Image (cartoon, rainbow, N blue to C red):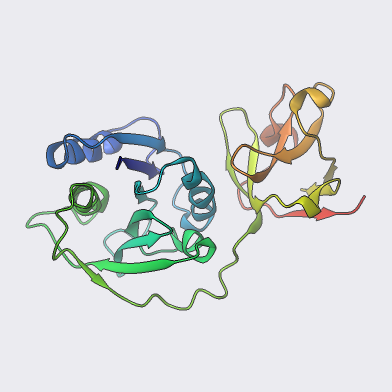
Length: 244
Protein backbone atom coordinates (compact mmCIF):
# COMPACT_ATOMS: atom_id res chain seq x y z
CA UNK A 1 0.00 0.00 0.00
CA UNK A 2 1.29 3.46 -0.91
CA UNK A 3 2.00 5.91 1.91
CA UNK A 4 3.43 9.41 1.98
CA UNK A 5 6.35 9.89 4.38
CA UNK A 6 7.28 13.37 5.63
CA UNK A 7 10.94 14.21 6.22
CA UNK A 8 11.63 17.87 7.05
CA UNK A 9 13.65 20.33 9.12
CA UNK A 10 10.48 22.22 10.13
CA UNK A 11 10.82 21.40 13.83
CA UNK A 12 8.31 19.74 16.17
CA UNK A 13 6.19 22.87 16.59
CA UNK A 14 4.76 25.44 14.21
CA UNK A 15 2.22 25.19 11.39
CA UNK A 16 4.29 23.90 8.48
CA UNK A 17 3.94 20.12 8.84
CA UNK A 18 0.22 20.44 9.46
CA UNK A 19 -0.24 22.62 6.39
CA UNK A 20 1.43 20.01 4.19
CA UNK A 21 -0.67 17.27 5.76
CA UNK A 22 -3.80 19.29 4.97
CA UNK A 23 -2.90 19.44 1.27
CA UNK A 24 -2.22 15.71 1.18
CA UNK A 25 -5.54 14.98 2.91
CA UNK A 26 -7.52 17.13 0.48
CA UNK A 27 -6.04 15.57 -2.66
CA UNK A 28 -5.44 11.99 -1.49
CA UNK A 29 -7.71 11.43 1.53
CA UNK A 30 -7.27 7.64 1.56
CA UNK A 31 -3.47 7.63 1.47
CA UNK A 32 -1.74 7.23 4.87
CA UNK A 33 0.66 10.01 5.87
CA UNK A 34 3.55 9.24 8.22
CA UNK A 35 5.69 11.95 9.79
CA UNK A 36 9.10 10.30 9.90
CA UNK A 37 11.19 13.29 10.95
CA UNK A 38 10.63 16.99 11.53
CA UNK A 39 14.06 17.87 12.94
CA UNK A 40 16.45 16.96 10.15
CA UNK A 41 19.68 19.04 10.28
CA UNK A 42 18.40 22.58 9.84
CA UNK A 43 19.06 24.06 6.39
CA UNK A 44 21.63 21.33 5.72
CA UNK A 45 20.59 19.11 2.79
CA UNK A 46 24.00 17.42 2.65
CA UNK A 47 23.90 15.97 6.17
CA UNK A 48 20.17 15.34 5.85
CA UNK A 49 20.73 13.30 2.70
CA UNK A 50 22.67 10.61 4.58
CA UNK A 51 20.01 10.43 7.27
CA UNK A 52 17.21 10.12 4.70
CA UNK A 53 19.10 7.40 2.82
CA UNK A 54 19.44 5.32 6.00
CA UNK A 55 15.89 5.81 7.29
CA UNK A 56 14.12 5.05 4.01
CA UNK A 57 14.81 1.34 4.41
CA UNK A 58 12.23 1.06 7.21
CA UNK A 59 9.42 1.68 4.71
CA UNK A 60 7.77 -0.62 2.19
CA UNK A 61 8.27 -0.46 -1.55
CA UNK A 62 6.24 2.25 -3.32
CA UNK A 63 6.51 4.65 -0.39
CA UNK A 64 6.57 8.32 -1.40
CA UNK A 65 8.96 10.52 0.57
CA UNK A 66 7.96 14.17 0.70
CA UNK A 67 11.26 15.65 1.86
CA UNK A 68 11.86 19.33 2.51
CA UNK A 69 15.20 20.67 3.72
CA UNK A 70 15.30 23.65 1.43
CA UNK A 71 17.38 26.71 2.37
CA UNK A 72 17.35 27.80 -1.29
CA UNK A 73 13.56 27.79 -1.65
CA UNK A 74 12.46 30.28 -4.30
CA UNK A 75 15.89 30.25 -5.93
CA UNK A 76 17.25 28.52 -9.00
CA UNK A 77 17.38 24.93 -7.77
CA UNK A 78 15.04 22.49 -9.52
CA UNK A 79 11.96 20.90 -7.98
CA UNK A 80 12.43 17.19 -8.59
CA UNK A 81 11.17 13.66 -8.23
CA UNK A 82 13.67 10.83 -7.79
CA UNK A 83 12.62 7.23 -8.31
CA UNK A 84 15.17 4.92 -6.71
CA UNK A 85 14.87 1.18 -6.19
CA UNK A 86 11.09 1.24 -5.88
CA UNK A 87 10.83 4.33 -3.68
CA UNK A 88 9.87 7.87 -4.74
CA UNK A 89 11.37 11.08 -3.36
CA UNK A 90 9.89 14.54 -3.95
CA UNK A 91 11.56 17.83 -3.02
CA UNK A 92 14.36 20.25 -3.91
CA UNK A 93 17.33 19.34 -6.10
CA UNK A 94 19.91 20.66 -3.66
CA UNK A 95 21.74 17.48 -2.67
CA UNK A 96 18.99 16.16 -0.40
CA UNK A 97 18.41 13.09 -2.59
CA UNK A 98 21.96 12.58 -3.85
CA UNK A 99 22.90 9.97 -1.26
CA UNK A 100 19.78 7.94 -2.02
CA UNK A 101 20.67 8.12 -5.72
CA UNK A 102 24.31 7.08 -5.40
CA UNK A 103 23.47 4.20 -3.04
CA UNK A 104 20.67 2.92 -5.29
CA UNK A 105 20.97 0.26 -7.97
CA UNK A 106 18.67 2.27 -10.24
CA UNK A 107 17.85 5.99 -10.09
CA UNK A 108 15.66 8.05 -12.42
CA UNK A 109 15.28 11.82 -12.05
CA UNK A 110 12.40 14.02 -13.21
CA UNK A 111 11.84 17.74 -12.89
CA UNK A 112 8.48 18.99 -11.65
CA UNK A 113 7.33 21.17 -14.55
CA UNK A 114 3.81 21.75 -13.21
CA UNK A 115 3.20 24.99 -11.32
CA UNK A 116 0.05 25.75 -9.32
CA UNK A 117 -1.85 28.89 -10.20
CA UNK A 118 -1.01 30.44 -6.84
CA UNK A 119 1.89 29.43 -4.63
CA UNK A 120 4.23 30.93 -2.08
CA UNK A 121 7.84 31.41 -3.14
CA UNK A 122 8.87 30.57 0.43
CA UNK A 123 6.79 27.41 1.00
CA UNK A 124 7.18 24.99 -1.89
CA UNK A 125 6.63 22.13 0.56
CA UNK A 126 2.97 23.00 0.89
CA UNK A 127 2.20 24.53 -2.49
CA UNK A 128 4.34 22.51 -4.93
CA UNK A 129 5.82 19.35 -3.44
CA UNK A 130 2.78 18.22 -1.41
CA UNK A 131 0.30 18.43 -4.32
CA UNK A 132 2.68 16.48 -6.57
CA UNK A 133 3.24 13.85 -3.87
CA UNK A 134 -0.52 13.45 -3.42
CA UNK A 135 -1.15 13.19 -7.15
CA UNK A 136 1.58 10.58 -7.52
CA UNK A 137 0.04 8.62 -4.66
CA UNK A 138 -3.30 8.40 -6.49
CA UNK A 139 -1.77 7.93 -9.95
CA UNK A 140 -2.88 11.31 -11.29
CA UNK A 141 0.52 12.81 -12.09
CA UNK A 142 0.34 12.81 -15.90
CA UNK A 143 1.89 15.94 -17.35
CA UNK A 144 3.48 17.06 -14.07
CA UNK A 145 7.01 15.78 -14.66
CA UNK A 146 9.75 15.86 -17.27
CA UNK A 147 12.64 13.35 -17.06
CA UNK A 148 16.15 14.82 -17.06
CA UNK A 149 19.71 13.61 -16.78
CA UNK A 150 21.12 14.50 -13.37
CA UNK A 151 24.58 16.01 -13.14
CA UNK A 152 27.43 13.57 -12.59
CA UNK A 153 27.32 12.38 -8.96
CA UNK A 154 30.43 10.21 -9.12
CA UNK A 155 32.19 12.52 -6.64
CA UNK A 156 29.33 12.35 -4.12
CA UNK A 157 30.45 9.99 -1.30
CA UNK A 158 28.20 7.00 -0.66
CA UNK A 159 29.10 7.25 3.03
CA UNK A 160 30.04 10.22 5.20
CA UNK A 161 32.41 9.94 8.15
CA UNK A 162 30.78 12.82 10.00
CA UNK A 163 28.17 13.34 12.70
CA UNK A 164 24.86 13.90 10.89
CA UNK A 165 22.15 13.84 13.59
CA UNK A 166 21.48 13.90 17.32
CA UNK A 167 18.47 11.97 18.56
CA UNK A 168 16.29 12.69 21.61
CA UNK A 169 18.79 10.92 23.88
CA UNK A 170 21.82 12.83 22.66
CA UNK A 171 23.16 9.90 20.66
CA UNK A 172 25.13 10.95 17.59
CA UNK A 173 24.39 9.21 14.30
CA UNK A 174 27.04 9.32 11.62
CA UNK A 175 26.74 9.02 7.87
CA UNK A 176 28.87 5.89 7.87
CA UNK A 177 27.12 2.60 7.14
CA UNK A 178 28.46 -0.16 9.36
CA UNK A 179 30.66 -2.83 7.77
CA UNK A 180 32.03 -5.98 9.37
CA UNK A 181 35.54 -4.65 8.73
CA UNK A 182 34.83 -1.95 11.34
CA UNK A 183 34.39 -4.50 14.12
CA UNK A 184 36.75 -3.93 17.02
CA UNK A 185 38.12 -0.66 15.69
CA UNK A 186 38.51 2.50 17.75
CA UNK A 187 36.47 5.54 16.77
CA UNK A 188 38.00 8.98 17.24
CA UNK A 189 35.84 12.10 17.36
CA UNK A 190 36.69 15.55 18.72
CA UNK A 191 40.00 14.19 19.97
CA UNK A 192 38.38 11.40 22.02
CA UNK A 193 39.00 7.70 21.37
CA UNK A 194 35.97 5.45 21.81
CA UNK A 195 35.70 1.67 21.82
CA UNK A 196 32.98 -0.40 20.22
CA UNK A 197 30.23 -2.17 22.18
CA UNK A 198 27.16 -4.07 21.03
CA UNK A 199 24.70 -2.68 23.58
CA UNK A 200 24.36 0.07 26.17
CA UNK A 201 24.42 -2.44 29.01
CA UNK A 202 27.82 -3.73 27.88
CA UNK A 203 29.58 -0.62 29.21
CA UNK A 204 29.67 1.22 32.52
CA UNK A 205 27.32 4.11 33.24
CA UNK A 206 28.50 7.40 31.68
CA UNK A 207 30.95 5.52 29.45
CA UNK A 208 31.04 6.48 25.78
CA UNK A 209 31.04 3.82 23.07
CA UNK A 210 30.10 3.35 19.44
CA UNK A 211 27.88 0.72 17.90
CA UNK A 212 25.87 -0.30 14.84
CA UNK A 213 22.48 1.36 15.27
CA UNK A 214 19.07 0.09 14.21
CA UNK A 215 19.36 1.81 10.81
CA UNK A 216 22.73 0.27 10.06
CA UNK A 217 24.78 3.40 10.79
CA UNK A 218 27.76 3.87 13.06
CA UNK A 219 26.44 5.74 16.10
CA UNK A 220 28.10 7.26 19.17
CA UNK A 221 26.41 7.00 22.56
CA UNK A 222 26.94 7.22 26.30
CA UNK A 223 25.30 4.71 28.63
CA UNK A 224 22.77 6.69 30.70
CA UNK A 225 24.24 9.93 29.41
CA UNK A 226 24.23 12.26 26.41
CA UNK A 227 27.09 11.81 23.96
CA UNK A 228 26.33 15.18 22.39
CA UNK A 229 27.08 16.97 25.65
CA UNK A 230 29.66 14.70 27.25
CA UNK A 231 31.87 14.65 24.15
CA UNK A 232 31.04 18.23 23.06
CA UNK A 233 29.92 17.00 19.66
CA UNK A 234 28.54 19.14 16.83
CA UNK A 235 26.92 18.34 13.51
CA UNK A 236 29.51 17.89 10.78
CA UNK A 237 32.29 16.77 13.11
CA UNK A 238 34.50 14.21 11.41
CA UNK A 239 35.03 10.73 12.80
CA UNK A 240 37.82 8.24 12.16
CA UNK A 241 37.92 4.49 12.65
CA UNK A 242 41.30 2.88 13.22
CA UNK A 243 42.85 -0.22 14.71
CA UNK A 244 43.42 0.03 18.44
